[in-house]
Image (cartoon, rainbow, N blue to C red; front, side, top):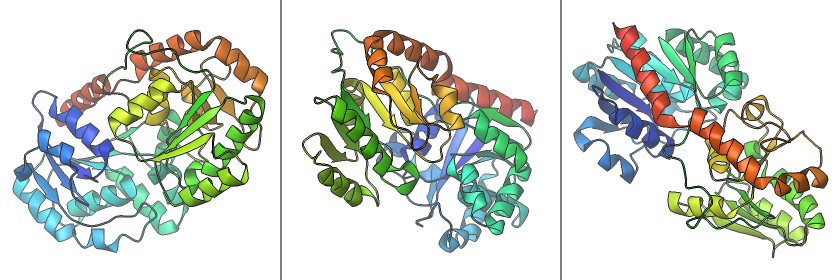
Length: 360
């Protein structure tokens, strides 16, 4: 089965999909990237199975440069004659794949993987984007979603069959033991993008409330974004500069060290699907403190496996103390959930099996 990934080759998420698909028996994998390809692709796909379109797409729209690559992409795909085009992020790469097939006669069938904001945010920005999303979903023989709430929205927009599975982990991290010392009970970690969608200002405010009650509390903020300067200034204004550390973008090894060291994980976006970062934190034994969104409630049972914080509500220190007292039990429950539902390879195996059934 010849399958072509179409997405952002500079994204570690697309690389993760590529690794999982390349490991499936009988899958001949190719990839087209709207940008370039990060170095990790070299170990997964040879250069002659890749096409880099060299654009800089924006999730917010205005991707005329990407659309202008359509003739080049279509010509490359016609030479390949794929069985499946697998588009990631539907309002950009999904639209490109749909146009390649509907206007320029590229063979094969389309499968679309939604990433979150392409379904939950972007279609609401304009009638054109909503129309394009509907057309792409209607054209897909199969679609994937990482949450039930996003799958419902996809069906409302015209999707047919939708497979639902988290964009999970490639392997479970080690349990607490000689390789993983016990966690400081008041250490926090946050690594969502420092962009308005992920509300870094609220992350700081929530930590400030906690820090007032827990004088030894410490927060590490990873990642980067347009709000980093404002977030750092906010920390200084709250006189928390000695208790909040901004470390920028981290590689996988550094991320693992931070997850392993933190007892708490903060993720407070205003909109989200099931977050792989939250799943990672759960697998590493962090207690998730998340915003009150339907997808977060698919992951976190309030008071049992973490805490869900409604908008404008302060965290309950009493509830947090209870969670710390039962941290070992919370870790065991979360790791059991990730082991059963949050590993990526078994989900991709089911995905490929369904493609074979649809191809029969």
